[in-house]
Image (tube, rainbow, N blue to C red; front, side):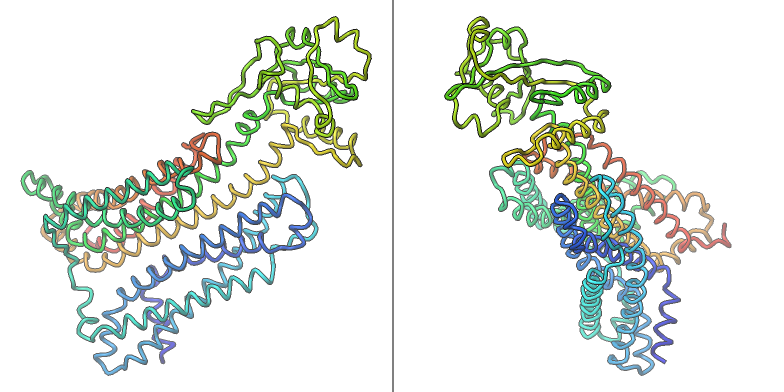
Length: 601
């Protein structure tokens, strides 16, 4: 009997449960994917760069787990409020709280099992797609990677089983605290907020202070370091909730007062709708703003790491290749790629000194990377001054041409052209090359890199420090951040949309009568539709703007890791806007379908 009632309740509230189900399925599938990529031991051992990337996915799993716990508990509280009248009626007819508790437990288990099965199936597909894409980015093939991975499946099942039990427990505690009368009349309670001027002013000032402290902690992260991250997390979260609980009700109240004075069409009804449920709405929108910040921020950071790859390589290497005793094969490959600049620099080695040709250095002024400590930036400059060992830029340029094991024993000396020619010693030539397009010739540079590695194979002290190898290593790490950022961001944005839909759709049932009354007294359907679009626009606008501000300032926190944290920042912002607008229209469509009776159209 209880199982039938649970299924009946599930069917009756299918649309509401579907929103929860979508959020859980997305979370489970991405969590499983992260764990599969992070726990495949054989896969990790096949490539040295994979281990660093897998660590990123493990971090992603932890972040996703934290947000999922909050989301699941939050969503379940909404579903409880949605069913409380039904539970109250059961108890009025004689059902005991223990039976209602068992009914709720069965519903939670059904939703949990359904979301776990679907989520893991989708997660296996995601693991296959993302695993292959990641291997493509890192340019290697694996014979041991398993998208269907039992250890990650067990971790996923155990984590979410515990989470569902916690959710069920939270609902049972909530049920034990309310009376039958409160359950029956739960939906009829208006969500008013009492605005006391003194309290509003104090809370508003406190919210701004907390936000400023949080923003400052992120902007000056190099000084605040780890404590700054903790401070920012606490103050920005608290500041956001206080900001929405004070400024949002005040803003809506002012808009409503303005409409009452200058009433136009049914705008006063629109703002009355907002004002009617502003109490709980402010808390929901604060939660949504934080999820938007996390979602957009995850995508933005992932793209920033990827986009900063070329900038990082350029900041350390003005030349695309620097090859001692360059072979004909390497020269041919580079010439085919398109050479922008090429220069040969010679040096001779004796037992105690390394000699450079001063005339050659002066005739071919090299490019070097110069660091501006005040602006914390690197830029390429041409050395036009007289070659001098005492000059840091000249010394660094010459030092980087010489193998480390040699430089430890000899001293660098600059000779005139004639003196250099007369010096009798072994000579080495280093060829510096700049291509027309570094990023467009990665395949060519990869071939040159392989030739160099093969030439020095077996040398104990040899390691590649070329521009290409630096970019390749960075790109391997960045590939992991892109995948993690995109999927974390997508998961957060899905939870954000679910949270917003929960609040809007749970209040939609009580709004039906108001819209029916307006239609019966002659208000055209077109005006009601416009009112809904406007109301939803404000609901989506506030958290969207605040969330964007959090991300725009928060990206500054990565300035000590990235050359340009805002490089192509418009890409993740545009992606977020597209997703956010789609959710806006879906929410409006669902809400219209509930509150507008089609027979009055």
